[in-house]
Length: 375
Ligand SMILES: C[S@@+](CC[C@H](N)C(=O)[O-])C[C@H]1O[C@@H](n2cnc3c(N)ncnc32)[C@H](O)[C@@H]1O
Image 1: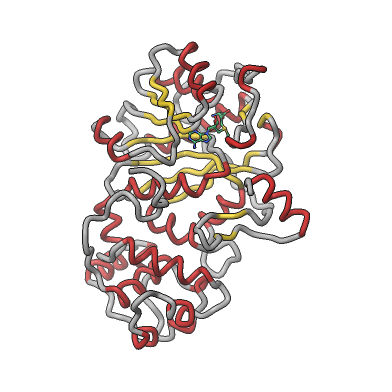
Image 2 (image 1 turned 180 degrees about the vertical axis):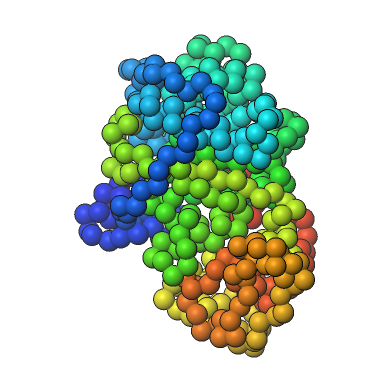
C-alpha cells in the first residue's frame, strides 16, 4: 500500500494518528493544528525570488517516488535560511564545505544551494534518472549520485568528506522515517552533524512530542535521545506541485554524535535500547511489564525489580542542569507505567536494568535502519 493510498484509506475511515506496523514501518493517521514560527534570518543570500524550475513533460511527477516539487520561492528561501542556521549552529564562523542534498528532483533547493555555496560543496543523491540527467545538464560540475537514499553508506561518505555531513532535503514522504533512522545509525559514527528536512506535519509532531501526549512514541524516544530536534515551521500543501493532501514541517535535527550519545545512553547498547522501545510501544495500552515479558530470553523477575542507582555520569549531568538526565530516574513502580509515561531517559534506565550497560559487539551500520537497507 503506498503512503498516499494509505492516507486516503485512513482519512476515509476516520482513524487518527501515526502508528508503526509490526514490520517497523510507520503508517499515517492524523492531523494537528499546531504551528511553530519560522527561524530568524541569517546572513546568506536567500533573497532570490526566482521561481523554482518546475519540471515540464520531461520530469512529470511520479507519485511512487514521493515527487512533490517545491514551487514557491519564498518557502525555498525560508528553508535555506533554516538549513544555514542548523548547519552553522555548532561553529558559526566555519564555512560549510560538504553539504548533502537528499532527493534534489528538479532542483528547487539545489539551485539556491549552488547559488549560496557552489557546486564543489554540494553533493546530491537522487533515485530518478531523469532528475540526475537534468541536474547534470544544468550543473556539469555538481556530483549527483544516482542512488537510493536508503542504501547509502553515510559513514563512508563522511569519511571521504573528512568531516560530518550536513544534510538538507525535501524528503520523499513514503520513506521519511526510514531515512531518519539511517541518519541516526550514521550518527553512531559521528557521520552526520545535522539534517534539515521536510516531513509530514504529524511526523514532526511525533518527533518533538513530550511524554503522556498522544503523539509520543518510538520516533519521539529515538530522536529526542539521538538529537536535539527543532520544528522550524509549518509548510502548507499549496507550495508544492502536485499538492500533497497533508501539511508539512521543516525539521532540524542536531545529532549528538558518538561521545555525547554514549554518555546519554549510560553505556547501554543501542540495539538493546531499540528492543526495549519497540517492544514497549507495540502495545501502547499495556503496562511496560506486560509488554516486555515478550522480550526474548527475559528474566521476568527483572520486570518488577527496583530501579538501579543512576550512574555517576548521569548524576553529574543532572547536577549540571542537563534536561535529558534530569528526567532519567525511574520511579519505584516503573513497570506499572504505560510506555507513553516514560521519558527517553527512563527508557535508557529500563534498558540498563534488563540488559546491563555493556556494548557486546561491533555496532555495525544497522541498529535502526532495516536489514535490507544499506551495507
Ligand atoms: C518531495 S520530492 C523533492 C524534490 C525537490 N527537492 C523539490 O523540493 O522540489 C522528493 C525527491 O526524492 C526523490 N526520491 C524518492 N525516493 C528516493 C530514494 N529512495 N532515493 C533517492 N531519491 C529519492 C524523488 O525522485 C524526488 O526527486
